[in-house]
Length: 436
Image (cartoon, one colour):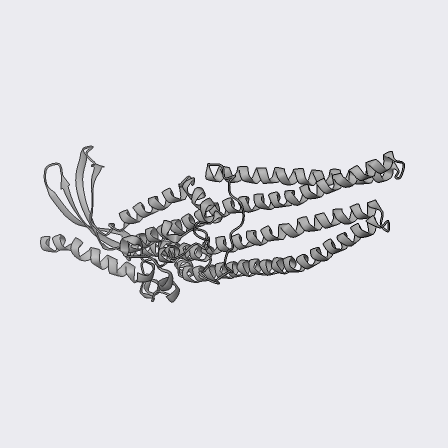
């Protein structure tokens, strides 16, 4: 029976593969769920740059900034981007290199093996191995690397938009503090004039020191408000200088931003899609590990002898294999639910920001009418004071209230600008996608 012995390995190995493959019939032969197909990065719509394109990366590159070109905001954004540390860019480059390496994993591998025989001698071989049946594991590895590139790309855009938003927010807050300080400074000078009047009245015996103390207190409070505003403006400008690594003192004014266009979708949604593609690739890799695999190998030892053979692996069955298979089958549903949740969260955030923006704009419109009425009443109080119908304390109290109302009204303009920047950051519209 020597002929039978020589053929037995070649017959038994493929037979064992078929038998073990039958242990998981439903899991091996089931149709791939629609969700897994729709989110797989290996699909033409989500291919990596190495595969010819990516819908996620294309969507990122298509984003155009809403910052007016050549404006103050654009100058700050450019300075912030130039001063960026580049950590996110480095992570994206690393992911791209890994994806490029994984794109060649279908080729044979060549490497040495060293083993110790039962006689105590060392046997070294150079082995060339090629997978014959891997149940899609190598393709899943390429998908996983592609999804890593997409996740890193989204994180890069999020990082760039976040840094630009921080710089612009610091600038807007500095401008707000400077504008409020201007209102407080004018009020302080006017209160100082009232204080001089009451001092003369006290010296002439026309007023007592209680009026002098009240007016001096209001003047001191307004001066403290002015000093706090100036300090805040200085702190925000220092923060901006840290982000840009250069002084930005010469800038002034705000740029008008367009209303929320309703598109594109938020960056958090794109990241959820890329994360989902990576999760599905991991599930495919794990599923391939549950199924039997087969590879061909050719070894070349030290004496020049060539040893061909087949390697059988995978298919480690255990008591929990069926449960593990069912868990992997649930991955597409999990990814779909997570993506839907990300869309809901992003829509809720954008809806809330747009509602806040509308409320601030309404408050600004209504506040302007109230401020005009208050300033009109102040002029009337001034005339009545000159005619002796109002006391100086009444006039000072009215002026102090008007100054604080004006200061709050000035703040609304900058509150609106900050909300607009938050909307643009959420959609990833503070930086041109082409900068990737």
